[in-house]
Each structure stands twice: as C-alpha cells, then as structure tokens.
Image (cartoon, rainbow, N blue to C red; front, side, top):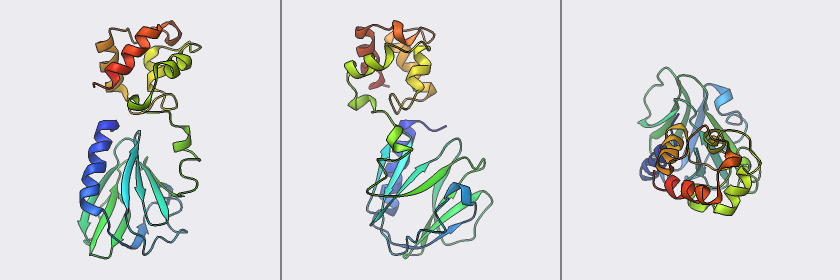
Length: 202
C-alpha cells in the first residue's frame, strides 16, 4: 500500500498535469469504486487544487470535492482519449482531449464525491488523526496512556496519527530505539516526544 510520502508524490505529479482542467464527462466502469459517479453531475467543473490528508488524495473542484484512496494497487494515469484497458475503472474526461484514468487490479480503491460543506465532517476524513507535523507530545501521550496494544499497532492507527504506514512506523521506532512490541501505555512522555521527532525525519 502506498504510504504518505508516495501519495505526496502522486499529488504533486497530478497537480502539474491536470490543475485547472475542465471536466467534460465521467465514465464509471466499476461502480463500487466511485459510487456517486453516475448520479452526481460534475460536467463543467474545474480541478481547482489537489491536496492530501494522510493517504487520501483530495481533488478540489469548482463546487465538489473528490476524496480518493488508492488502497493496495490503485494508480492514476493521464491519457489522451484512447480506448480503455483492462482494470481501468474510472475515466474523467477533460475538455482539452486528455483524461484522468483510475487503474486498480484488485478494485479496492475508492473515489468519493463530497461537498465543501461535508468532506471534512464525514468519514473517511473526519476520522483521521493529525499528521506528525501537526501533532503535540501531550496529544499523543494522552492517546497512548490507556492503550494496551503494542506501540507499533497504535502508531498504525490512522485515527490517532496519519501518514505512517508499516515501513515508516518500523523506521520511526528503530530510530527512537523503542521495541515495536512494547505496550503503548508503557511509553514515557519523553519517548513519545522522540517518536514524533523521528516520525518527522523518516
């Protein structure tokens, strides 16, 4: 599964390629990936900005917001309007003749259509914790002090802190010299501070 830094790279790449493009049409081939894609009309909307929260890509349109999660193997491609290939499940066509294609062999990814009023107030984004850059030692220590799960498991909980997947949690704990199997409620305040410091370095 792509982790925070990889999703950041995808975000920056897409910003260079599709920002300010106008949507001409959307084709949803596998409906569970984009459940509202056939009922919400996005024709004429432009890609105003692309942001990221944790592992979610956020496409800010003129009046709507697309919240996308690539899950295990999802990928976005920019194409001319050539024919679809196998495992392409969503195509967003632009007025300049290009299109954004979503490709996913396992079909685990999701692209949800939200409004500016509700995209931060409803799942999945409403359940996300802060990123390591925006977290305080007090906050994280309070989250850990009653948790009787291994510290690695606690750090993988995206409702506590985002951006850290399996590889980055392992590296963070290695740099902080904390065993992944230690219970979260046994980690000291100073160690929590060190975890945040190392999480921002990996």
